[in-house]
Image (cartoon, rainbow, N blue to C red; front, top):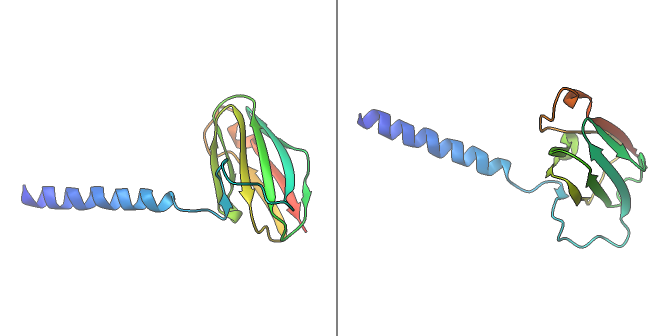
Length: 128
């Protein structure tokens, strides 16, 4: 019984530490309370079931980006894995600030299962 309690406690503690590590800071500041940098590139994003629509898909490297996300319906996420950005979305407007974008092609994905078209909920953009 001592064995089960000891290792059960260690397993629970390990799970908590792993979960806490996943809640760390991102390359983006996902807080809506942060001030928008003066030189920021603003990208308006509309999310709805099974799609993201961006008003810009060509961005400048090294200049902060503010994604102004208007989630029209459903619960989704805004995730750019290669930039370590992830924000859960619910209907309404939210912003994600990406301070130091590097050149490359990036893919935005929804990582919250939102129905049969979930795998199609992607958009790409370029940073040059």
